[in-house]
Image (cartoon, rainbow, N blue to C red):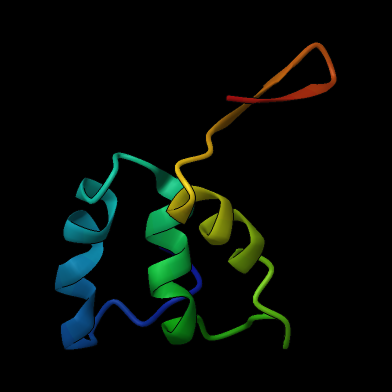
Length: 67
C-alpha cells in the first residue's frame, strides 16, 4: 500500500484484513487510520456499514446493483 508506512508493525495485518471477507474495500477501511495522506472524512465508512448489514454490490454497465 503506497499511502502507508510499511515499516510500522501494524503492516503485518494487511493480509489478515483482506482475509476477513476477501474484500479490498473492507481491508482498506480497517487500515484507514494508518494512511498518511487521507481525507478528513472516512469515505469508506458507508461501504463498511452496508457490508455489516450483509449488503453487497457490483458495478455493471454504469449501474450500481445491490444484493
